[in-house]
Amino acid sequence: MAEPRQRAKRAVHCGRVESVERLTPHMVRVVLGGEGLAKFSTSEATDSYVKLLFTPPGVDHYPEPFDIEEIRAERPREEWPIVRTYTVRAWDPRERLLTLDFVVHGDSGVAGPWAANARPGELLRFLGPGGGYAPGTEADWHLLAGDESALPAIAASIERLPEGHTAHAFIEVADPGEEQHVSAHPDVQVHWLYRGSRPVGAALVEAVRTLEFPHGDVQAFVHGEANTVKELRSFLRVEREIPRENLSISGYWRLGRTEDAWQSTKAEWNRRIEEEEASRIGSAA
Image (cartoon, rainbow, N blue to C red; front, top):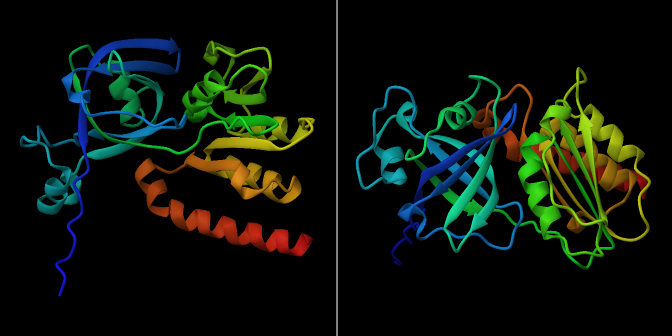
C-alpha cells in the first residue's frame, strides 16, 4: 500500500512595518519589508492577496519557529491566529516592499485597528499570495467595479492596462474625502461614486446598470460586498449574457458578517448563486 502523501506546509512570511500612511480618513497604507519577505513573490495577477495572521486576545506569543499547522493541531481554536484577507496594492521585488491598504472604521474589526496603530519595526506574519485575475489585452474593453475593499485591486488593474485599452472603473466610497489618486491613461474612465446615506452597493449597482456599454467583448472584474456582487453578477451573466469566462466576480465581504463567518459560508453561497443563475439562463433560452 502506498504511503499517504504528506501535505506540504504553507509558507509563512513575516514582514516588518517600514511605513504607515493615512491616505484618506478611512484608508491606511502599510508598507512591509525586511528579510522575512526573502521568499515572497507575486504572480502577474492584479488581484493578488495575502492572509494576514493576527495573535488573538489572551495569547502573548507563539513558539518559534512559527508553524501554523502545528498551532492548529495542538492548540484550541480560540488560540489560533486570526486570519484576515487583504489585496496586495503593490509589490516591489527589487526593494522587497509589500504595500497593503486597510479600510479603517475606528476600533471596529481586527486588521483595521492594527493598521491604524502600527508603528515602524512591528512584525506581521502572513500566508500567500493567492489571486488569478489580470486585465487581458484581448478584450475590447474592461469593466471594473467595487467598493473600498476592491479599490486596491481595481487601482492595480488600471495601472496595468496599456494605453489604447478602454475601461470603465466604478469605485463606491463613503464620500468625496475617500477618493484616491489612481494613475490612469486617457482611455480609462474612473467613476467615483459617493455612498452618503444610501445602503452599501446601491450607487454601484445603479451606475453599472445605467452604463452605456461600449461595443465589443468585455472583461469584467466585480468584487466587494457579497449582496452587491450577487446583484451585479446576475445583471452581467443573465441580462447582459456575458460569458462566465469573461468575468472575475466574488464577494470580498458580506454585510453583517465577520470574515470568519463569511468565509465559512462563502462556498455554499456561491453554489446557490450558480444554481439560480443557471436556472434563469436556461429559462431565458
